[in-house]
Image (cartoon, rainbow, N blue to C red; front, side, top):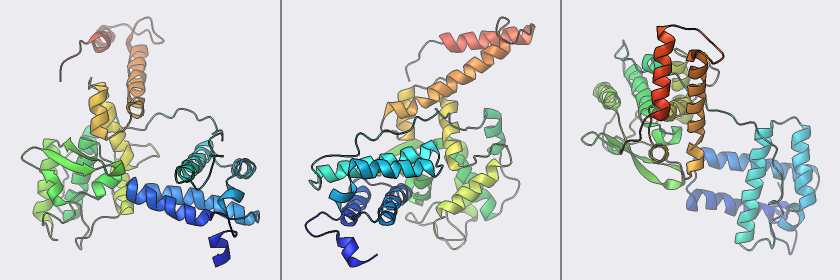
Length: 335
């Protein structure tokens, strides 16, 4: 890309300079993770490539206008992109345009009226409790990699961590006396999350056989040379472990985070407590797990109740219904 293009047209604000400022704002002021930053960069750089293809000016005034933005969205849809991908790119454009208005680079926000495609409500993928128990069973081997991978699974499922949060953990992040782990979440918001006894035991077993440095500042989960595991390495570890207990195609660390939250809600945990444990900034984000729990309850009801879709009588059916009735009418407890 030429210098003239990068500086935009004379007398007009440069789109690319504004993008650089926006990415710097997301990283330095908002504290977004590298993964989130890369998603924003990918979406907005696709917009600049569209402008270059159309020979449109790379200036704010010439690119961030309704006609150009709508043309870009139409091009995405015509290429057969999934509605969720289109919606993400629209959200990135809206966020960037809002930033430009707040920084007085634009007078109006032309992207605020862009309509995102309607999305089907997708329930999170999670393990059953039986699958989770199978996954968390102690490893039969005691090699460094095997016990490390087991500890990673215990931390994900036992504390509901995000991938980036687990990747950034240092040995000093864990307080074994209080059975907690200190994590840095989205927007650089720190929170302290409880650790299960099995997670601490798995971590201790791992550190006892680890050959690399175990100083407080060292990464908690490291490769053979003591370097932090990469995002891709952790994803491969989790996918390999999940493949042993689940046939579902989605095998990311977020499946374990979803399982953590879903099983808490199934057990009657207060949604506000689950919100804090997950590090959600909004309760509406956590509410998806109440829907998941209702789906479980409805499925169990249909399988068990004599007047539901399945009408199998018997002691087992009766006992299941009693348990369902108790779950529905269980009195709230002060936690």
